[in-house]
Image 1 (cartoon, rainbow, N blue to C red):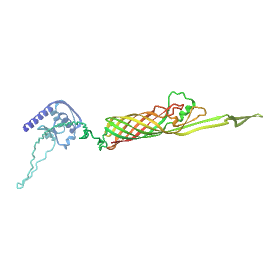
Image 2 (tube, rainbow, N blue to C red):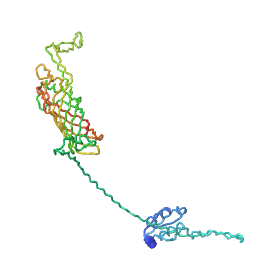
Image 3 (cartoon, rainbow, N blue to C red):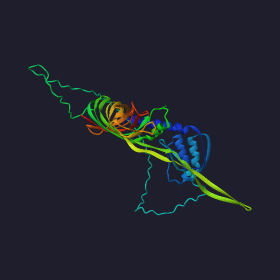
Image 4 (cartoon, rainbow, N blue to C red):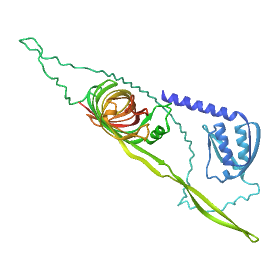
Length: 426
């Protein structure tokens, strides 16, 4: 069966080769080497050409032009120019040296009388010409394997049945065994939250107020400060993508207060001569004086306040986290909450709106008993170990009520910062 298949393939190849050589084409070459011309014929018409690559005739220049001629005729006419011809061997065209290429005026060598010793005959080598046909059989197998796996994840909750007293039939009182688990449940369970906050804060006056010049100077004297920090601890409960926490924090605000004012009473102007010059016209001399006057007060008094106003608050806070996205060991979430704080200690001064610029001390008597605030931000949490995660939270915080309601300048404490902390799961 394979032999018949090979014979059919060989026969079809011969038929296709004959059809390509009998097709009439237009062909031209100008000052091209024979090797280049043969390469064009072999590539364009799929003709199998066989020749000696070291034949010097391949480097000869050929100029030829043909219209509507078959490949065999074109090849024969081109080879005639170089003293070559071709022979068909199977589906190959073999280019050989033409026997009629010998010039007519060439002198044939005369036969020499050479006596042959019959006792020692000369053995002439015999040259045998053979035709080798090479057929390539290509067999291609394509194997397509498709493997599809489906993973189904499920959650199984195992709840232990409480022990029952056989005599009374009542449940025994016992602590749950999973209060201190060896493997923490990060999705549903309890955790402890510790944090440190670095904040930038200032006293923000209400907009649209008609302030006197004195209060305007007080407003500009209270500057923005980065020297504010907080420490806190809270208990946290995780339920799916939500987390609820409540706890205490100690927040310390440290703002710079730089105020100065100069008071002057009475005074007079003192005249000083700065320079004298004169002009002489004939016998007259005219003097000119350059003078200046300076006001000298009889009494001057300057008030200067350059100090740090410190406020320390103990706050109870409650917050909620909502997880937006989880990537490997990272969780990205939104945060919102509120707080209520009471002053622990106060140390600072301010200026009131009255004659003589009275000083107002920051004391608990003139300070609000409670300060309420709201807070919002976002954060990223990273699972550092089996029981521990660390996090960072940029946030903004603003208090609702005024810290000093008796002060003529209405303002509220506000600012933002960064929380960094640790969560311990148990």
